[in-house]
Image 1 (cartoon, rainbow, N blue to C red):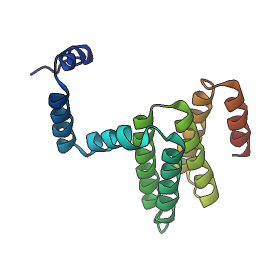
Image 2 (cartoon, helix red, strand yellow; image 1 turned 90 degrees about the vertical axis):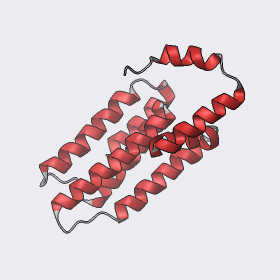
Image 3 (tube, rainbow, N blue to C red; image 1 turned 90 degrees about the horizontal axis):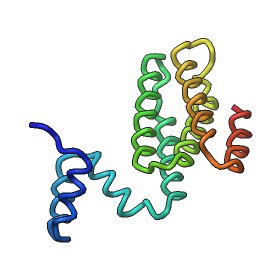
Amino acid sequence: MKAASIQEIKQELQHLNLKEVQDLCLRLAKYKKDNKELLGYLLFQAHDEESYVQAIKDQIDELFTEINTSHVYFAKKSLRKILRIVSKHTKYSGHKQTEVEVLLHFCQRLKLSGLAKEKNAVIHKLYLMQVKKVQKLNAALHEDLQYDYLRQLDNL
């Protein structure tokens, strides 16, 4: 069975009434947690991007306190988990500024945690890749925002 394209889905949705669209959205939200989270973001949080960013930052802070530093392997797994959560939430938003802010916060927390030292190559490379990603995203932003974020990047 072949999946329909976005254009085909869009055309078909135009022919449905409001009740049918609501039923489809609810049915879609039942089957995947990601769909439910995206729908929740679009309905409840998309209008207030600043509080959404703050909620993501708070979640990052909480996850950093839970990192198991007894062994480097567990620390790496925890950092990858945090990055998966960060990328999922920034994907919901779709704003480059949100992604830059959240990734900068992640990098700052990683640097403060002391895990990004050169003694562990994998964690250090993960840190450097996120910094490089922030630099790339920053280039697409408005000049005023670029300057503010570049100053934060220089501190890293």
